[in-house]
Length: 70
Image 1 (cartoon, one colour):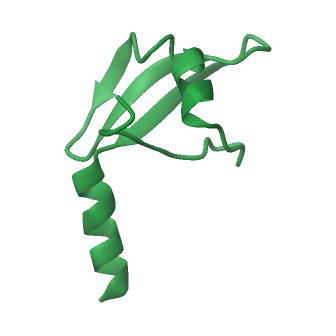
Image 2 (cartoon, rainbow, N blue to C red; image 1 turned 90 degrees about the vertical axis):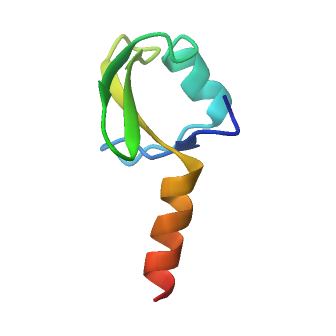
Image 3 (cartoon, rainbow, N blue to C red; image 1 turned 60 degrees about the vertical axis):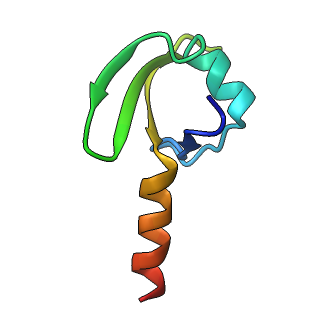
């Protein structure tokens, strides 16, 4: 859901649009991890590389912005 996820860059420093991430993760089909502030989903790039895609909740993003502002 676009309203509950904020996308992060992958370790390779590539940035992807939300539409790309939906495709890469097959619409967030396979959750491979969950933490207090993020879910991690399995994904596959066009070249066949397997990746982990971390998503943050909107609450976590807001908390991080507030922390940075202080």
